[in-house]
Image (cartoon, rainbow, N blue to C red; front, side, top):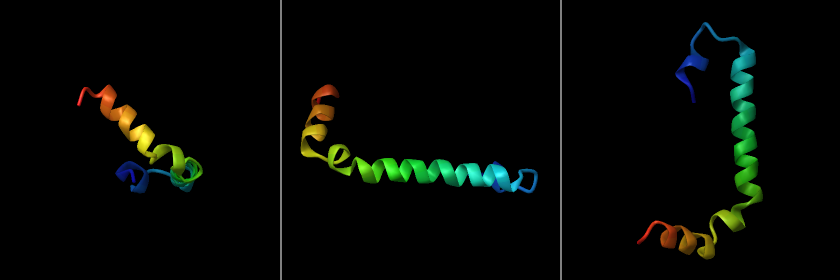
Length: 51
């Protein structure tokens, strides 16, 4: 969470936008959990990192 958004100078609209963005990110992760956390992706990342 952003301390700027939580400060008094920002309106409720800015706080709502932050919550909206967070919900979109969570929805993306939940919809793609099988791809993001698959062993195949992990091995591709390891191979690409030169480990």
